[in-house]
Length: 113
Length: 115
Image (cartoon, rainbow over all chains, first blue to last red):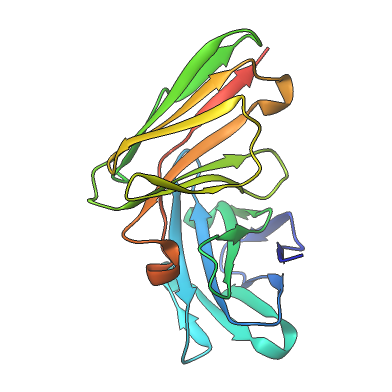
């Protein structure tokens, strides 16, 4: 079955630490990949997306993600986190021609000042 | 401001009640969606409407009944729910079907508690 896995449910970092959140999908065909973020008390919003081309995608607020097809992964990274990055992060995938976005279960990030 | 407004933000209902959730988008989008967000579970797609036509019902129980009178409004009618239906219900919209742009715009959600 098509699925998206986020292995870390909770991550705690200190400010200025580097961040990498894992995301894997299970599908061998064409995929479009997304990271959404939900700040406390706010709505889900798009952080970045990959459709095609350069597998290293840059998003808002200094985030980037790398699509590695051989590993079925789309990990989210940020070299130096800030307290304001405290949020829940969701990886999502659209597989082949489907209009469904399949979401992972989310990773809660807490950044300590 | 997300451009997608959901009301009510919080709802408590008994299992025999009938209530409705409302979603309105001010973005001129053509597709609207209902998602269910439960604790520690992935977001679950419930329904998709494209140009007011339902294009997806993701095996949702009939106690949830969607209605899309126009491209800007989406309702979720609730009837004889179960306690396990307690969750955050998210409405989203997109310019076209998600396979074109990929981006969904979400509302802040309606937190439903079924007693």
